[in-house]
Image (cartoon, rainbow, N blue to C red; front, side):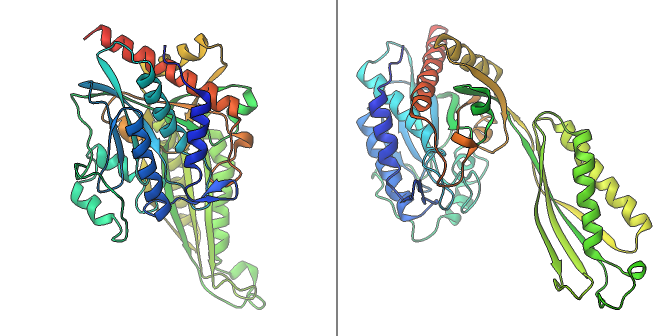
Length: 404
């Protein structure tokens, strides 16, 4: 059994939160001075935990167990959104660090170890999931190097690799812990959330082209009102999407702009952004189909042209079922209530899952708050979550060691 130290766990979490501290949260955006300092601190703690730590050119921090030729990879990210929360991403990195310390203090006689990684720019300051995409080879080293700001400096070890990469013969699986960033676990009274998959995203830009006229003198029945055309499309989203949606479906109107934007001018141009997310690709197809059909119907009968374009698309990513089951067993053994759910937010695990078996575990967020300084979790949930996570890691490396 991997026996974590709660005091050390909380001490390290609070120490990391000092880098970029603002109010109750952190302002530690990728490639900032606070980000570089935090990554150097993580590297030093990984060394103390008995791992060989190095920071690559991008800023990915990798702690490698030199005693094992094969390893389970644990991690997340320590960069934040502007004025974000102290646990978002940091929780997963510190869970990995704590398990490394626990194994240093009481090494298990097994052939498989753990490695710990802190990915760069998960939040997308430069490019979303940048560090994990480079690690898994989805973005070339040259492309990544071009994205690194010239002012980004970090006290790298002299033997640090240019870029850290996934090693097929070494990395058996990737496990990531994270705060939920939503209200479901708290509402259900559950200590642990077990992620069955990360939702796919489809994002659309819709535009309407009408005619500017005097709003006081143009009769209502002769107007070519661009805003009205998009309001009708918006109404379709909120009326029809609930009929198509699954249990995990969410959607949003993220922006709406009208020009000329004056109370006495009939709108000549309007634009809005529409996004939908779901774990089921077929549901996403149906939502998109409904949206496009509504635009076609409008354009066939209306005198205001509406155009729509899909501007972003990611497919749903299921987590490995055996790792889902692993977390479920760990929660039951430690007598913690768990809830299996989809992640509506993107995470590094969605990239790692395309290279190796991957799984995610959540702990509750107080009030469901995240991406703000109000983000927080109860200490007892942080500790209990780490124990469940460590128990799952213990079972995984034990099972894999027994078959090798």
